Length: 245
Image 1 (tube, rainbow, N blue to C red):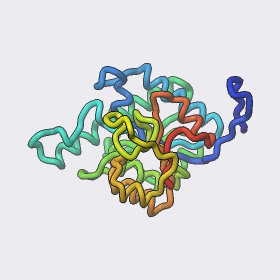
Image 2: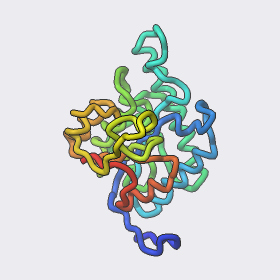
Image 3: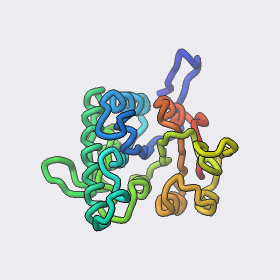
């Protein structure tokens, strides 16, 4: 169904049927930088509800940086450190699930790490069935393997569920040729190719994630989540950030 906004005065129709939204764990922490800010979680869930109400199917991958960052774990064994990070994503996924249920959206958590009695184990066909039945599916546990980021896990899930687009929510309004927080002359790209993203090493996501999206012809949209309405704008085809295709 088309979506009418009084502010804009016209109907906005979704241009994507199924999307994968990647959130950082830090987003859920708000200004505190750690733990949960339930006001932020509620805001994100309400923003996603706007697009699910239009019939758009949404899968979500959330990082674990508000609890644990494996690369900052000192001399700890990397495999063990990454396992802790995977568990952090499960905690964040459960918090998001509760947020969705609170706003009236059915949501399921499917984890690559088996935790029987707490979350469903990821099975591709079951995930697609949930999406087709209008449920938000939150993919936890990364890829289930160490040495892979949640960006890579999100790209993998996007390919597995045949997502039309990979939405990467950040704290900047797109992709720049250099860090806009450090360089005042940084230039923003409205569009860029997967090949150029990899060749320039722009560090928007790790190379494995970008390569998975390129090989599976999945466009990437990088946008600023500080304004959660950008999710809705992007779903309806507005230029809300930088498109990688």
